[in-house]
Length: 257
Image 1: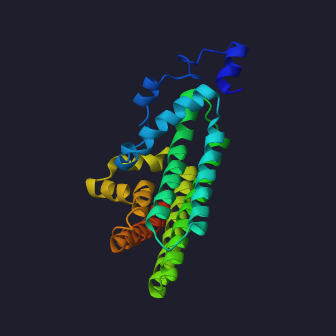
Image 2 (image 1 turned 120 degrees about the vertical axis):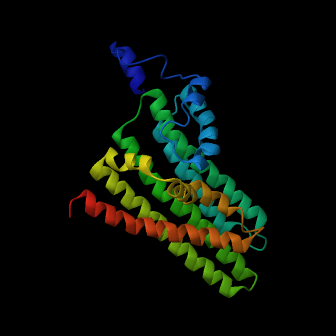
Image 3 (image 1 turned 45 degrees about the vertical axis):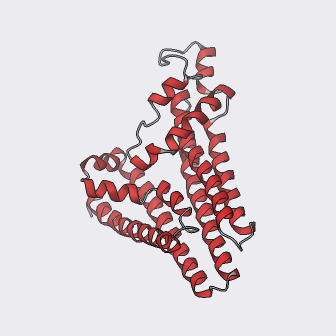
C-alpha cells in the first residue's frame, strides 16, 4: 500500500491534489522535465521514462522496485560485457547499449514515479543514489571489459591495455565525482544545487558533455569510430577529474575553512 492509499483510508486527503496514485499520461508528460536541467537528459531518457512511470503507477509498482529493476538491467549489461562473443564488436556493443539505456531510463523513472504518486522518501532517495553508483560501475566496467576481450582476441594487446587503463581512470573519476557531489549536497542542501543557476553557457555545455547520457551514447561509437570513442571517454574522465578537484575548492569556501 502506497502513501496515497494510506491517506485515503485514514481520511487524510488535505494535501492530495487529484488522483496522485493514478496520474494521467498527460500530467506525467507535462512534468517529465521537473528539476531536470541537462538538455541531453531531456532529449531521450526522461521522455521514455514517462511511459514507465505511467504503467508502473497503474500496476502499483513502487519506486524502489523500479530502482532495483534499474540495477538488475545494469548487471545484465555487465554480464553481456563478460560473456558475449568478442570477435565482432557491433552486435554485442549494441546489446550492451540497449540494456544500459534501459537501466538509465528506469533510473530516471523511479524519482518521477515517487513524485507523481506522492511516495517519495529518504530511504528511496538513498536507494536510488546507491543503485546509481553500482549501476554505472557495472555498465562501464562490463563495456571496457568487453573491449579488452575484443582487442585481446584480435591480437591488439597495446590497444587492449590502453582501453583497460582508460576504463579504470574513467570509472574512478565518475565514481569519485558523483560521491563527493552527493556529500556536498548533504552538507549544504539546496545551496549547492542552486549555484547551477549562475553557470555560464560554457559551464552548461561542459555539464551536458560529462552527463551519463553522453557516456551511454559513447558506447555506440566504438564499432564505427574507435578513436573518437576513446577521445570521448578520455575527455569525460579528464573533465570529471577536474570537477572532482574543483569540489574540494568549493567545499573549502562553503565550510569556511
